[in-house]
Image 1: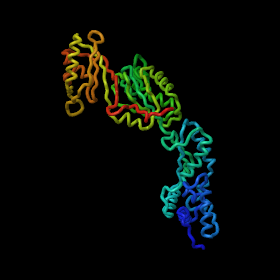
Image 2: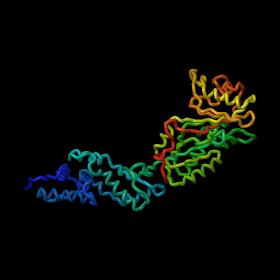
Image 3: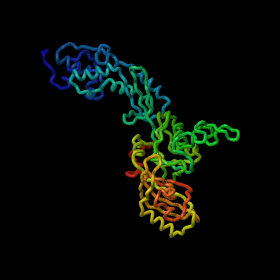
Image 4: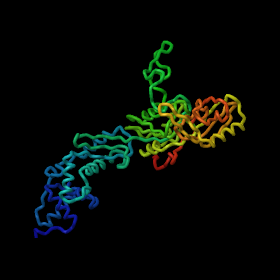
Length: 433
């Protein structure tokens, strides 16, 4: 009778687990955690051990966790204490979703793999010790914090480090997508040193040493500082990264639809700020020189969508003609430019070569006397100003050559920025909060 062996595959696998050495009920039950509902792994392990003992007509053998070769007693953690430590670790962080992770000693991870190898089980069979700890602390945690467990882009990851005996917290970045309009020239896109004081913050000025251009900061006025840094402060982040769809020179305005950008706020301790409040803060900090709209929380994939596809930009130049020209002459010049390939000689900092571009839908509008608005779309890689002025003969044809008069550039503004292959705004990348 003692030679009888169970025919049920579940019992055969359970016997194989027990034959690897002394295994506690928890570790036995964990191997079959997907079998049976509303049963703890200890109850599942005890039930399997009981059935196998009855089938073999042998005494029931109890294996305590401390004697288990797999977990070495680690399954008997003080889960309530670890939960309290986790609550304390995340107490000053705003989050809606959280993931629990576990870092066990390498020896236990090795035992997990060895157990399944010896028993002939798949490596992903049942629960690992990591999964057990994650489950038990996670469900206790939800009784004390207003959040949900999430494995896909959680706001916070709390790692139960059994080696270092501490709770490590990883705060996921916040991503904000929007478009900015730059309404005043002389504003850089990125933070860099002030050209007047070369970053020192001081320069002699009527007896005063504080640099009047940067007010002693040593930095040029920039969108990154005014917009990105203010949002970092608002969300209490440790850092912020500004990602943009292209860029513009300091003196180029950005109007119309604005330039798409993403703010990646690193380790934000606040993340539930209302979008309207963020836009209002930016307006106040920038004194409305920079206007941000279409702002929305977004997923991490928005960064690649904004930065990795080429952009199509449309420019509006205001120019003054040296000699007056009639509306008919303006129209004729625009017609000639729309049918021509603009060739520009590039000989600065590299081997001389020609760049050829075609203007998209060029237009000219008289604003006042000899003041004209010249608008067109063009691919990047060409001197925009020279398309109007001719760039001392480097660009042909130009508006100046088409009108046979000199042209003085007053302002340059970008009035439309779109992706060449797809729209930047996609609901799949935006998040409602």
